[in-house]
Image 1: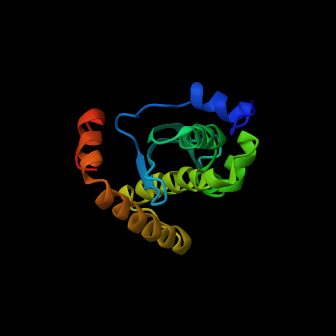
Image 2: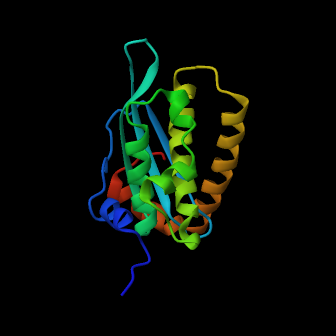
Length: 171
């Protein structure tokens, strides 16, 4: 019997890397997918490299979703840990899929979710620290925000349960 997913996808699903929450995170990103209802929250801790550039020192995620959503969440965290914020923003959904070997076409939207949550965490970090936000990142943020609000409206009951379970207040 052939699996819908590659061995690597199943490995990242069964043993996710960087799963969990970062207390006092420097940036928090949330993204949802209107197609399937998956929701991801990604946390970053920012530090400086030897050149003094801001890097993602630590990154973790919490995802409510399918095998592909969890695997892509895990993969993006491994791809960006240690990267500068600028380089992390360049990680695409294609990079996530390539890192996993491949995803079934019907599950490609999960890779977008992971990339969007990362962009939102970096946007949140820039906002909190009153740093210059590029026009591209602002536009991406507005698009993601609209999609996430749509998901939250559609799944109000789940969101309330999620807040209780994760003890996430005001998010």
